[in-house]
Amino acid sequence: MFDPSAPHIIILLIVVLLLFGSTRLPGAAQALGKSLHIFRRSVKGLEDEKDAAPQAPARLPAADPAQAQIAELQRQVAELQRQPAGGAAGNGAAGNGMAQAGAAEPAGDSTSS
Image 1 (cartoon, rainbow, N blue to C red):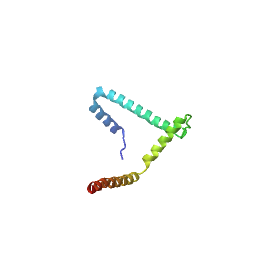
Image 2 (cartoon, one colour):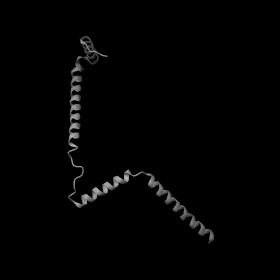
Image 3 (spheres, rainbow, N blue to C red):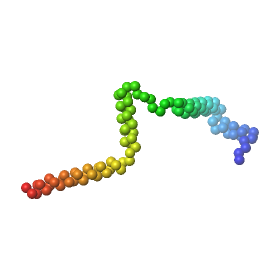
Image 4 (cartoon, rainbow, N blue to C red):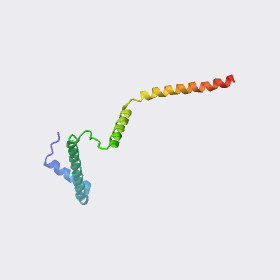
């Protein structure tokens, strides 16, 4: 498809030199080198985290009873957040029906008095 030969590379370097100029070209090369260095460090860090993750235990036993209770409450909150919202809507509808029935009762009392 694209076979970079010597004339192509020379033309490309001349175009780059004309675009950036001889004064900004060293700074651009330095910035590119720093960016590549940061990118390589980031990739290496991700690989290190990936390798270290399976070695860590899934759950550490809590030495303090308060810590164990906090962990249990956090687990329960996470379970509640995973439940579908449909169950809460059903309870709200029943509550509205009760409120309407209660509102009708005082109106009936005031007309009979």
